[in-house]
Amino acid sequence: MSLSVFDLFKVGIGPSSSHTVGPMRAAYLFATRLRGAGTLARVAGVRCELFGSLGATGHGHGSVKAVVLGLAGEQPHLVDPVAAEPAVRAAREEGRLVLLGEHKIAFAVDDDIVLHRRRRLDFHSNGMVFEAFDGQGNTVERREYYSVGGGFVLDEDEAGRPVLVEDATPVPHPFRTGEELLAITRRTGLPVSGVMMANERVRRTEREVREGLLHIWSVMRECVDRGTGAEGVLPGGLRVRRRAGELRTRLEAGGGEGDALAALEWVTLFALAVNEENAAGGRVVTAPTNGAAGIVPAVLHYAQAFLPDFGDEEVVRFLLTAGAVGILFKENASISGAEVGCQGEVGSACSMAAAGLAEVIGGSPEQVENAAEIGLEHNLGLTCDPVGGLVQIPCIERNAVASVKAITAARMAVYGDGRHHVTLDKAITTMRQTGADMKDKYKETARGGLALNVVEC
Image (cartoon, rainbow, N blue to C red):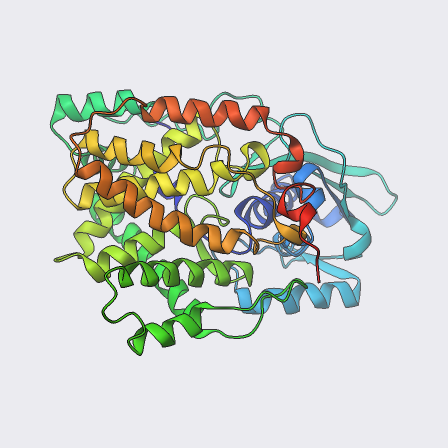
């Protein structure tokens, strides 16, 4: 196994893991590469070109802002979302940028960051080229980077490797497929979460793993609290109104009293809160991406609110199990909307959340795998067609619907015996093949589907 649960769940800012978190990481990597080579002081200017989906929807996804912040030395898990916009505005107005907070250069935000709407690099749709120049216009450094989904970034040297995140650390229970994972659980008697914990302990102590996952959970809870406390409209021009706060007020006033399905209203609230906060550029957890960031937190909040005796131990087991399933997607298909459509984002998140919930409500490893398969199977073919290139319509509501679907998948699987016709591995293979067949206009370019047919007002 080359991936950790902490590769799947990362703290960042909205609105997109591939279009905001990824470009910020790439810009930061490029700037630190200059410093590491001892050439930072020679740099008089930097130019960044964004290709493919990044170029097509970069403005709506905050990619320009992300590049500026990354070059300035900000990192997605540390940047202050409140201070980000003023910092970018100051750079634009002054025509200056301080690389890594150390070296000032001339920088025209709107000229030195170029978005190519209809050009792409060969390896991946989310391609970037950074180039630094000296005072005579000579190239000091040029580097290609690729944002491959979920905040993962590869440089040009890594792009051809078969494994996205290489880690030579041996783990006790390596797996690449769902079948291999189930075989391990049968051989060891461990639940899926137990297999993951054993692997995680190679890199961290068990206490560090638990503390890290509970920190992820705290960030998710804080995101829901912020999302349900905010009002007004989301940025970007569509004037999409924030609904989570109003829905919370109604539910707390007893709006669902006597309704057998009232719990689902809360699930909707949790998901809306996260994805409205993401759309506003707030702090979220990639789970496994920003565009699908509301599903795992919504199902976790559901479990905390409506399951008996749900505490920290169950949170850890939930996230470890969800992470195991996320690894299968990352290793065998994609979690990038620009590569396989929204089935790779919402589909994988729904599958992960269903698996996590199935384990904590008593599911066997076979039932957990069944829940994950159900969660994915009924998102196959889902396109990524953001209206106006913003992570708002249909993304926000799509997270709410998928959260309910994940709960249904988990309960359906646990009430069964784990036997089913379509395996998770086959469903993931189908998702990869469907993504390859899908036209590019349906893969985060805002040139097809709802993005084409909904008139922007």
